[in-house]
Image (cartoon, rainbow, N blue to C red):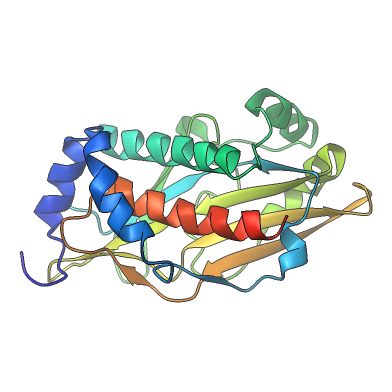
Length: 242
C-alpha cells in the first residue's frame, strides 16, 4: 500500500473482518477531526427544516467492487451504516421517526419496495454496480439504481411527507473501486434525496443534496468508517438547520 491508496484487497479484508467494528474507532476519529472531508451542496437550509425527520431509504452502492467483496459483507455494511446514522441523528437531537410509523405512511402512499432489497446492473462503461438497502430503510422503486445525475424520483413520496409533516431523507452513498489501480472513492454522484413538508404538511417539495467533490478514502480506513464519516457530515448539516 502506498501514500493515500486503499487497496482493493485491503477493502475486502476490512469488510470481511466486518463488524470488528469497534476497532474502527481510531480511524473514524481521524476522519471526523477534518471537518472539510465531506461537504454538501445543491440545497437551501430551509429544505432541512421540519417538525420531524424520517429515513425513508438508505441505499449503499458499490461500483466496480472486487469479486471477493461478498454479499454478506455488503449487507453487514449497509446495516451498520444505517444504524450509525440513526444513532447520530438521535445524539444530535433529531431522532428519526419509528420505522413502523414511517412504513405505514409509505404504504398508504402506494410506495413499492424493491424485491430482495437489492439491485444490480452495468454502467454504460461496462462497470458493474450493486445497490443494497438497509432492512429498516429499504430500497424503494424508482430509487434502486445509482443516481448519476441530480434527478429526484423521491418526489413520488410526497403523500407520506405531507401526512407525517416530516422531512424524509434517502442517503445514497456510492463507493467506486478503481479498476486499474488501488483506491476506493466516495463518488461525487453520491446524493441524499430530500422531501420537505411545507405549510404544516399541506404540501411537500423534493430536493437533492450532493457532495461537492469526490472523496478518496484514506489509506487503511475501512469502508464502515468511511460510511460513518459520510453520516457525520450529513447529520452536521441536518443539525445546523434546526
